[in-house]
Figure 1: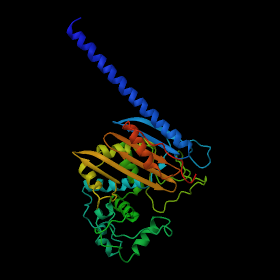
Figure 2: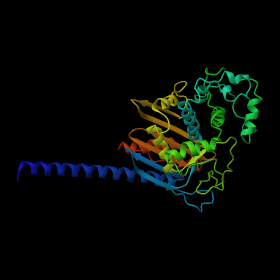
Figure 3: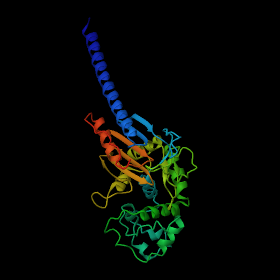
Figure 4: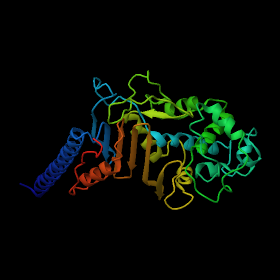
Length: 349
């Protein structure tokens, strides 16, 4: 046998062993992930959908539990979930899209686009809305039933809570006014802007904004006593996604499909260490998203996105147990081939 053939056989053998080891490691990870979620669901610690990708490939995607409080309808991967504050990414990215189009500057005062607001709007810049440093008062949730109610409250607001740009206050009025500015510039409703200018161009086909209880394949949230929530949007503009489209959205951010790396970095820049931005929290290094973490909650929905170059974790539930960080930590341990913690039964079950 000549040397070339011997080398070829050795190379093939090495590749075969390597591939076998990789397959074995991957199978073990999937088995551990399934064990984690099967046990968590059995303990009523997780009712929802999960997606885990590693090195750009989805390795685990599954549904656990029921789609509503009746217990008669099982979840599947097509169900959309309310993702809470993660939906604020759509207005934040929308603002930067308009900036790249030259239709606004982050240093513009919001009075340029919303002249109907009192004189304090001259002090608030768009960047203040994105970084939650506007000084706007909190929304009066018990008095607000729709967008017009909230706008009237703002028109009647005499003064700000603090000087814009001097303090961080996580406040949905910042989100509300971002959406109104997008509407004023584009002459479109915010819902239409999200659907036509953001979701459809990147191939997100199943996203829906402000879904009602009658929406098909929309998971209904419920508490541990089996009581289903009444879905009500005090302010509009909340996008619901299924697993496939949620993952696509994460990849849209990571691959800069809608806004540039520079604009994405601007959205990741917090006012102060540990404070939230329009994309939650994250960082870019040498033109690559190194971290993107965002969580959200509304009613009894809860969602978590954790993404970096090595993996992406997406968790959505319609029976909030406030344990998604714990679940995510166990998933990361499994991916790192380290010992992981099983999820314990919720205290209130």
